[in-house]
Image (cartoon, rainbow, N blue to C red; front, side):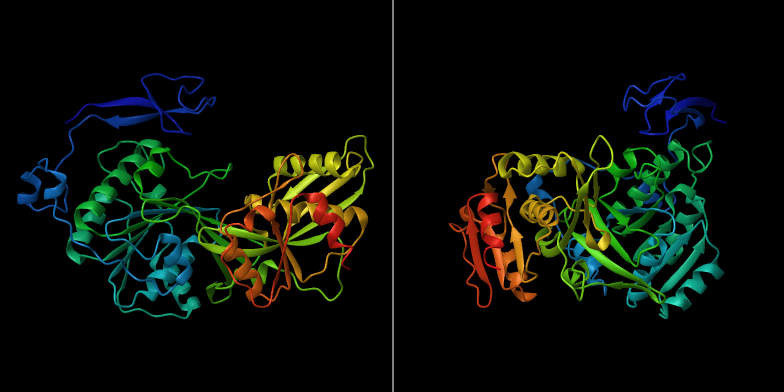
Amino acid sequence: MAKAKTSFFCQSCGHQAPKWLGKCPSCNEWNTFVEELVEVSSHPAEVWKTPTQARSKPQPKLLQDVDFESLPKIACQDPEFSRVLGGGIVPGSLVLIGGEPGIGKSTLLLQVALSLTDTKVLYVTGEESEQQIKLRADRLEKKSDSLYILTETNTQAIFKHLVDLEPELIIVDSIQTLFSDQIESGPGSVSQIRECALELMRFAKESNTPIFLVGHITKEGSIAGPKVLEHLVDTVLQFEGDRHMIYRILRTTKNRFGSTSELGIYEMLGSGLRAVTNPSEILLSQRDEPASGVAIGTLMEGNRPLLVEIQSLVSTTSYGTAQRTANGYDGKRLNMLLAVIEKRGGYKLSTQDVFLNITGGIRVDDPALDLATCLSVVSSYEDKIIDSSKCFAAEVGLGGELRSVTRIDQRIAEAEKLGFKEIWISKYNLKGLNYKPKSIQIKSAASLMDVIMNIWRQN
């Protein structure tokens, strides 16, 4: 019998040390080391391999001698989920999806599994019973003759079922509930999560079977477990949103098969998650009466152009220090833009409280929203209304100049499709502009003050 030994692991990053340390040398966090039992033994032959495969060893090959077979991606009925993954489910890929408790991770994956009627899917759950999965499937009002449920947490037992069933897609809910016989520590520990992820990765790559892993997150919002978990997988998806709101956002933070800036929006209904194919409609609020402090900006999320509504409220401060509050927007960038408005425009904002909100509950970081943000603040300060048929797409520099932004043609086309009559851009974007508008007028300016002086003059 192999001798067991103890080792210390950082619960934040997974760094291993022979003794307890107060401060982790890898991530510089304090009091994160815990002691775990680790068995020192060589890896046995994987249970999914035949004896011939277990004896064979990989040999080095020249790159031009590698035989490449183009494996078709598994198409999803969900267009948002397919686009975020990079066009579909890649065979042999390992995908990790994380999010807050109750946000809808299990519902999303079960909904995807039920939609793949021609694909044999195995749903491995360590958190719910078979009856609970059945109740959720009935609520989704979908049926599938190729979806199998397995309530098991031992990886060795799971692999035995995989050999017998030979599924084409595997869903594991969740990685923190699995445990391997090769590690003596309990489920959810750093060593167990790392070992189980390694075993699943080897199976996925050698059998060309895609695997989806559900991951818990910490109170800081990062995925629980060692950082090596995110390095092992091919794709990391983050399911975001407020549990008390109806909209959910599926964001890609890592993707070896596509863009890392794609975004999918869902609406949580009683019958499951509905993909929102035109997010601009939900990001633009509908109101009967126009109000000051509202401006529309253009946003690029991956290859998708969106139009979002920026709301500002500027009021005289009641305290010695003015408040700066931003919801869905970078607070540091807001402070920079307020300094530009005060320095270049002469608006005294140092004695004003500024509250900024991005409608729809999403978080934005596109610099093309700078112009709309500045105009929203000035509109609230002056209590002047910006015409709702106008939108804006330009970055604001520290000198108050308007800088060009990328993919201006797609931004203008999206604004025209949604019925806007006028769009303001930087004059430096006119040089590379190829789009020929039909019903929208393109206005250009060199500085922020040029837009401020002209936009209300037209009204």
